[in-house]
Image 1 (tube, rainbow, N blue to C red):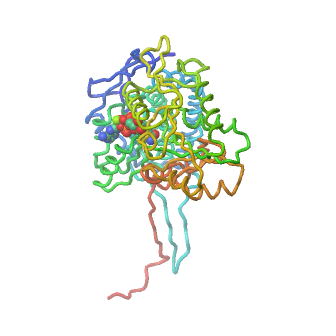
Image 2 (tube, protein in one colour):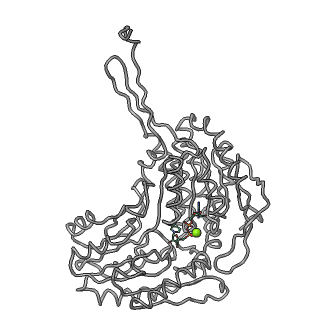
Image 3 (tube, rainbow, N blue to C red):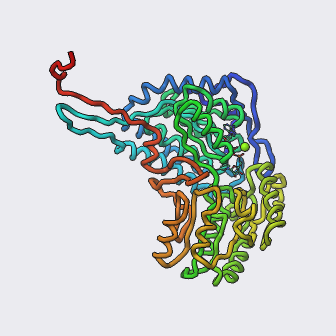
Length: 485
Ligand code: NAI
Ligand code: MG
C-alpha cells in the first residue's frame, strides 16, 4: 500500500499550497510517521472558497441527473478501493480492519442514496387565479464543512453527498488526526468533478477551520464534532446569518427490560454498542440501564463479554478493539476512568493495555462502571470503551434519568414487548431510537440530535432541504389591466 510523502490541499482541481507549513500523520498504534499534510492557512482557505464560489454558477445549473451520475462514480470508486482505504484508516486512526469495511459500506450507500434522492427532490407548481405559482428548490452556494476523526469515510459522505447532489460547491476540512483516507479520496474527486466544485483543505481547527467559518462567501456551515466547537460554529453562522447544521456529542441511554428473550444476544449487542469504534462514537450506547430483576445475572454476563473482547493491533483481523486515535484522547479517557474510580464502582477494566510492537498506542481495557446517573462518568461524553451501568426498577424514574443528560443523540431499547418498546421510544429525548439493535443508520433514515447533540438531520431526504432554499416564482398569464393610476 502506498501513502504519499506529502498531501497538499485540493483547491480548484489542483493539489497545491501557498504555504510550506505541514503537520504529520502518525500511526496511532506505533507512533510511526506516515506522511505530511499541508497545514492550510488563511491563503489556502481563501483560495478554496474563491474556487468554490467561481464553480458554483455552472455546478448549480448542471442537471441533477448529471450531478447524480458523478456521485455514483464516487461510490463505485470507494467500492473498488475499500480494502486499501481500510488499511490507511487503520494505520492513521487505530480503528480495526474488522469494523472499518462497514464504514465504507455506509459511505458508499450515502453517495448512492443522495444520487437517487436528488432526482425526486422537487419543488411544486400550482395553478392560481390568472396564472401559476411555482416553488423551486435552489442550492445555497459555497458550503463549509468540518469533520472529526472517528469515522472519516462516513463523515465525508454525510457531508459531501447531500451538498453536491443539491448543487452546492464545497470546501471540506478533514480532521488533523484523520486526513489520509480523505486526501486519497480527494485525488479521485479531482478527476470526477469540475475544478472548484469540491475543495479539500487539511489543517487545524483553530486556524483552517476557524478561517473557513469566518469567510463571508460561505453560505452554509456543516459541522460534526464536539459540542464545544459546535457552539463556536453556531456563533460564526449567527454572526453572518447563514444556516448551520451540527452533529455533536452523545451520552446515549441503552435500556434493557426484564422481558428480553435472549439475554446473551442482548449482552453481545449492548457490548458492541458501547465499544465499537473503540468507544469513540457519538452514537455509542454508554449508559446501560438494566432492570433490577435481571441486573446481577446481566452484569455478570456483560463482564464476561467485556473481558472477552480482543484488544490488539488494529491490523489484526481478530482484533475487536484497537487503540484510541491519539495520546490526547488517551489522556482524556484515562482521566475519566480516574474520576470513575473515585465516584463509582469499577467492575472490570480501567487499565491501559500494552500491545507488543504498538507501544505508542493508547489501548484501553474495555471498562464497566456501576454507577448512578448523576456521576461525571454518566453525564459526560468519554469517547473511549467505558460503559456506565445503571440499575432501574421504576419505569418513570428510569425514563427521567435516561433523559437527564445534556445530550439527545441516540438510544436503544431491548424488549420483546411492543408496548414497552413504543412507549419508551415515544418518551426518549433522542433523535435516534433503536429497538433490539444498535447503530443501524439505514440510508434514508434521519440521523441527528435533540438538545445539545445538534441541529438538523443527515442521511435522509430531509437533508436535501438543509442544503437548499425555496424560491417562489409567480407567473401571470398576462399583465393585469390598468387599475392603479
Ligand atoms: P473537535 O470538535 O475539536 O474537532 C472536530 C473538528 O473541528 C476537527 O476537524 C477540528 O479541526 C475542528 N475544529 C476544532 N476547533 C475548531 C474551531 N475553533 N473552528 C473550526 N473548527 C474547529 O473535537 P476533538 O477535540 O477532536 O475531540 C474532543 C471531543 O469531542 C471527543 O472526546 C468527543 O467527546 C467529541 N467528539 C465528538 C464527535 C462526534 O462525532 N460528534 C467527533 C469527534 C469528537
Ligand atoms: Mg479539539
